[in-house]
Length: 496
Image (tube, rainbow, N blue to C red; front, side, top):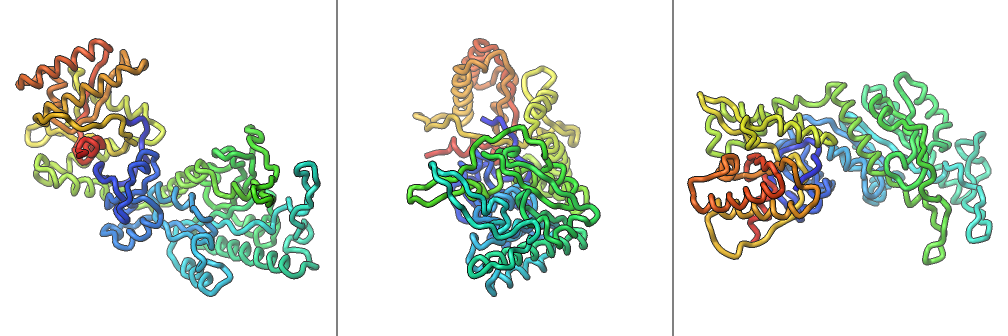
């Protein structure tokens, strides 16, 4: 069953339920929409960012030019880089000491990795340097369990944005290192802007970073804007205000939400953990909300399309689909495969995430004139050739699967499976008086359901049972044909 569309990426095989790199089962990833598909269009499915980075070096389609994104100070889980990758952009390995100790900015290895990233031909880059020493909350006492706690000492103020002159020891080192990281990111963002590339620089809205001379100069450049938003506007648990400086109009428009009416959904009051150590909720929510990452990734894709740096999708996609159809004997001849691939590409263009109802209406608009099935076909040599529906564009979940107790012909078993599925659906109150779209990979069953009868007596008996169920629930069962490799239900049906 599927109720949600996936983002448009490659053509993954519905039977490929293991990571192409580490062979981990990715069934749950697929169900949650968290699987990663190779951005170069080789149709490989991967379980993690690390597996993609390893696969990328050996991908036979890596010659395809895809815009490259890089993230500095990405955090341990790198949700933004992952969202960018799922949107179809290529990515470099994110830079953060939490990912690898070799990425310590102040070590020799960290400096070398940073310089190598500077030489990488990226189209967009995101920076979020450490903000612990630049918070205005430092130096403010707070009440905790009836006692006033002094809290971390202030290290800067409006007149001393680079840090107090009288700092010594560990505090002086903290401020000096914070300044170096921040100014290096600001310098890099300025370089990207001068090269005509996209940059984003993120910090808390009231951070002292925004008052540094280098940052003020960067913000004053033509085309640079500051987006301000609260985490709760993108699914965060608290009203945590953040600012993003960028030269991308699309990213600015997607993120800029200066008016928030959500209120404080959770308090930011510090608390003691089980070991008696004070914990600050701001640190616990340092990772970007998933909604913010998706909005950023989608707007960056729009920016790349507007700038004309995205590769020509149609020609590449049609060629890729044609190569997939070569495996099937019914699509003989390059001319037929090209015609079918073009129609599939046009169908993919209609399958847009967030417009699931429009996708269903599109299916109904292509129903057979008798109203018995949904049929896509193309004229070829005076004949009508069926076009498989791109069912892989939906997020499918396994709702019913079991072993057969007896052997029978495959056509009979598939018809029995259809009856079991319809019977299960009729137990739900909202599945009555509706048109039921069912994707199947059997042309025998496709035509038999459409006609309501079959030359085979055994299938005819089963079709009578199916018709009785349809009459009982006032259902219009409309089959849609697809390839077995694009049918998510094919793999669960083969369980031993």
